[in-house]
Length: 478
Ligand code: BG6
Image (cartoon, rainbow, N blue to C red; front, side):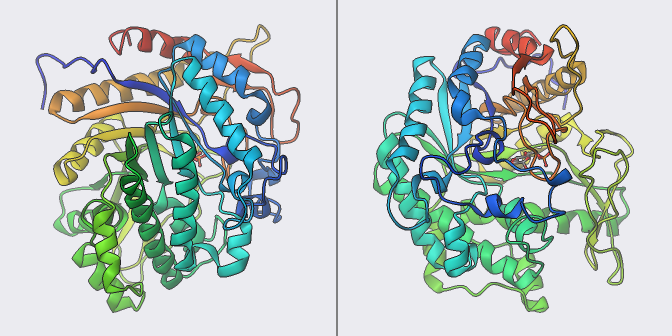
């Protein structure tokens, strides 16, 4: 629908930006930090682009004050970052490491001193390796208790300071990449194991939220879900059915559990027919219902367009991690759907579709189905940037991308969606897990590349100044 007049952004709107521990911190073995599964995985030859690691990353661990000063100058209202479990409890379930807590306390205090709201993600993929070795990490029910204890330590320490908490970042991504595609640790390709690990992740998410309630924490908590709303390639009913299946399997399958504590029936039946349904206990569903979030965190980058796929049709294909446009392989689930290129949208050099209207659709679908406020926890453009001789970075393409997405959010607010805030991905440039350092997302350029860390100097991109004006005008000046 078209609106005659747009609603303004609420006064309390959190204009933010985001990062994750492994992608920015570096200092991978400092101050008694334990080893995570990512610390290990990146050192397996061939796993990441040009063998890149986050061992130094963009050295945020040592430069956080400089980074926060840049945020303050820009006027940022919120900064979303993740805490590395291995800094807090190095072996996952043992002693608490005061030095790790202190680092995040300093960061949080620095943000608060500059009136920047900390948005803390408990888990952004860097599982303690000790738990992987001990009981196979997410494949054991034991993870639920250990994750809850870790969450409790953080709730306890940062009570009163942190008001926004994100439980698991993109459970749908770390579980499917870790246990189906084998492109993330623990490098497994087994759907049965995937759905079992996923079930325990659901329980861990719910148990952490339940703990938050029991501790009467002042604030809001929810998961961050990587949501790519589905379109059918055309109105052929078989393709519309494939799109329905895709939405059920790739979106409702996770978000229904978060909000309603149950799996969608069609998908559960399909999992049972395939012999890959997880083993569950009756009490699990009681816990899942007790873990209803306060908001749905959404990481929105693109939509998915699909068509029907026969039983002997296309299977899993590799994504483009090189930045060579058009190099992603055909991908699908035989008997259900296959991915199509949407002819109406542009693509990035990494073949990600650029679809701001999809953002509005994502926000509306969540509101209709779940009736929860939404916190946009990630959205942004990964592209090549050029550092000019005078230190400028002219990223007009990023401004264009962000501007269109902010407009789509305003449309959604005018449609009646409650949006708490918008965290762009990312604040500084950072390590893109599988794509190295050349795929840049930040407002702040960090001068390093795959092979050379250089001096990791920070430079403000044109988009930095653009967002500064957006924040200053509360979204009126785009
Ligand atoms: C999300 C993650 O999947 O997308 C981030 O939460 C990630 O950690 C971002 O960096 C962009 O993905 P990529 O693969 O381009 O780094």
